[in-house]
Image 1 (spheres, helix red, strand yellow):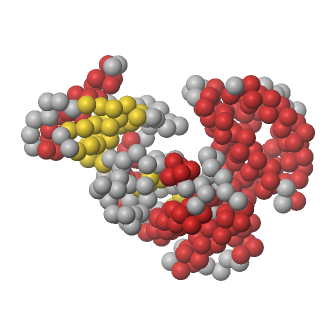
Image 2 (cartoon, one colour; image 1 turned 120 degrees about the vertical axis):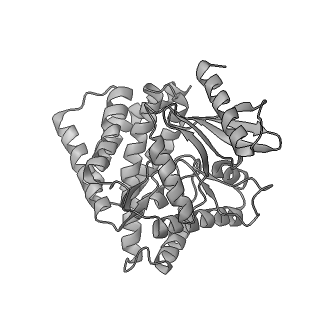
Image 3 (cartoon, one colour; image 1 turned 180 degrees about the vertical axis):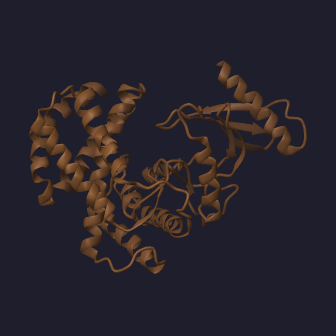
Length: 352
């Protein structure tokens, strides 16, 4: 056990003693897998109860935002974990434990059961519409042009530059910039709502069925980067997930389910089906460029090469969807000629 883990265990024991009004002499911490950030999660057990102890270094993680947004989400009817205790200086948190069942695992278990998959996604979409309708946006930053561009720049800096080791010519960087400007402008023109920013199968949970009813709503985690942005951002993160994919017909069916629910709840109005799918597709392309860069950065900077395995699917999303939009044909042609084959080689070598 490291010194930091020992301090987290001592702090957790103190907090559980306070919560239970008694001594907590023996508290065990089970190290669980972390996420794409620098946070680490531990299951804390005391008697018959379990909690989530979180090591969230304050130099890299915004714990104030996490606690604030968790409270706002719960008040809005979103099933976010209760934060039971927090030490901002050390970067420790004690949270409600939702269990171990990420949406990703349950979806994979039911991959050949489309009705069950649709039910899971409809529950996630209902929770998303609740978030969009009821969460107060006044205190959240905006997903503005600067943020959109800085995210897409990760593709050029970390994937093209650091991972593929390409030296791009001026006309290539201008082509990338022009394409990014197109995607950013279309995102800013969409109706603006609360955006989770990572609303996908690894950040949604099927709660512990011993403590929560079978007719559940999904647990929502990893929400501290929430902003106000395009209404399709979280939807495309969910339905064109980097970690699991579905047939186009199923994606479209579920996207239209969202559209109907969002219209019924007054989140959006007056958007045709064709316009809706254009919004959905183009927002996904912006996210694809960002995520390709993030996965490369996770490998190179954060020593997490396992994320390279998720880049090919993200590239497939991008090339398949971009092919339908004339505004991106020059960029797509450049991508296929300059990036695709080299990326395939490097990804195969990097993940072998």
